[in-house]
Length: 262
Figure 1: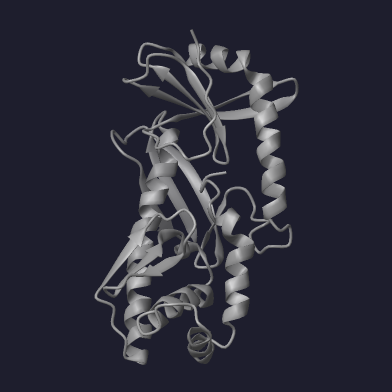
Figure 2: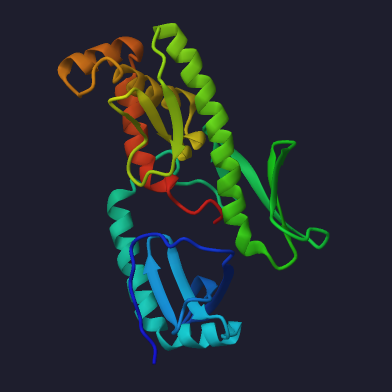
């Protein structure tokens, strides 16, 4: 009756409910998502955590009972992913010890607060006030907080990156045709043959000098389309510490892809 699938790619969620239970002393946190297209129960375990998808007529209790049946397998898969992560997540990286309940914005740790607001009827709202990022969600709608925060940061990234590209490009006399903000899985920026620059929205979290390095890197590609020695020589003139900034991204990359709400 049931089918278990393991999926490494991130699932696209629609208002999942965040839940947890303990299995033999181990906490299992998971997302429960109802799908009108699902005909059977399924669970996936990957770098982004555990998710249970159920048909529309299933209850919260049904989802937990199904997960408990396969809890040993889930724990084993989580341990496997933790071992893989430990190999590529330097413990000395800047984001290695980011406290729970905080988020990195422009290189600074910002406290994050979640609040259920009975007065809200629809989607979540994100606002910054007094150095705190406040996410207000409808009562019982904490599952939508991650999506709302992602949307907020994408818009913030779009404004920030556009402003820096305009400023740095003007200084260098280089103007891209267009700028796009994307959700790349492994790239921080790119430059097309037509002069379009694309940037990863997660750059909104990095320190300003690291963001400028990525922008200067792509602006240099407007005249040097490859990574030749000439390219690196030109970039070194624009950013004398580009190697340090590049190393920061390499060391912190996996942390930047962590769930925003931990």
